[in-house]
Image (tube, helix red, strand yellow):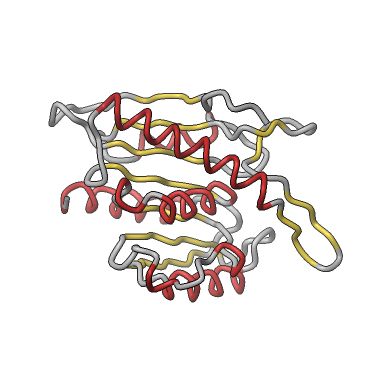
Length: 220
């Protein structure tokens, strides 16, 4: 893994309402890249400056990942060490973006899909003072990622949106509901939504994401 800065794609605000547009960082899922989620910007609040980051690990099949995963007969095996290195790079990206733009924990949101959702939550745990809230979409959160004392993690009241499809073939809805229980232990301000969809973002889900994100910047 290289320590070079993460590659990003940028969508500037479609409507400027302030000298410091709110910042939205997008983190794609396994096997994808920074272009995958960037199109969401067209359906979200036009005031956002949107930064979509490419995960640092290239895959033989194409695309990139934040950490290696392996499907085995006993379940999913995750390389958490590689994930920590990716998290360090994400943390540096967050620092660089905020230093360049002047954004801070009052106007910086992170949206992650699937594997990117786990990275978004990990970044929130590492840098709660620098992030307004996280949208955790079709993701999996596990006990291995939980701090020893969840209530002391500094996330009390932090806004988190969790969305998941009841027909998701990759991360079954039961796993999402377990993830929800773990997030509740962190005492975040959790908004949880289920949809009759697979491993994706459908129209109803996208509308809820947009509404939730807008509420975060209007509230702050």
